[in-house]
Image (cartoon, rainbow, N blue to C red; front, top):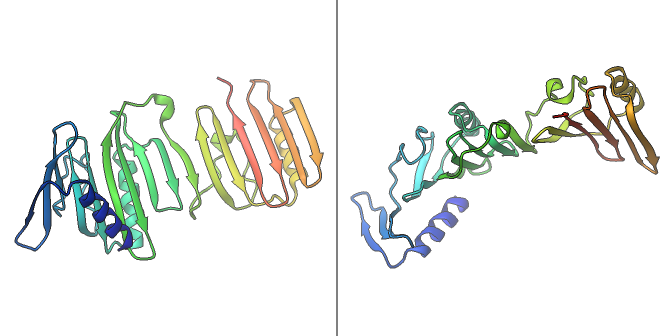
Length: 246
């Protein structure tokens, strides 16, 4: 509830001079105009599907809202953990897969091909959260796909994104993609010298840079097509970056 309470206070504080009324259920509704003269409504607990880019109402209790010309924001409570994960998947299925980012399984931000954006945040400790819609510029085709995934429990190695390299066999901590580059952060690879041989077997044997300094080992090499892989193994973490030649 803390996230919802902070959201409600901040929204109301921005429009204290507006028209305030109490509906039949005791909800405080504030109607005002923004700096551009557009109507703004705060406090209604009715889901506006059109403002939320066609998304259905989440399985939660709506606590507060802000509806404006450019989008909407809702604070909610009482959402179950599995429903939060399912709702994020629904957002992705609805096409919000450009410049997408996920943090710790429960925070997601994504844009669709028209430039409409959805941001979802959920606190699994108390079941509260928020969801916001907005409008922006249409992304390019290169922006499609998850831009970053940090934390969480369901990340998996994707060989297709890594030049065909096999799974190193350790837990994925995080990964991100940006343009033609993909990076994985992993737990330390125990037998990293064996994995270097696998990298070489996949053709990454040109323009080699190899170094070992104290607890840090780095192997970087390109293949005949110009794609490049960089493996870094430290005392606490390993990272592997694949850069596709464009």
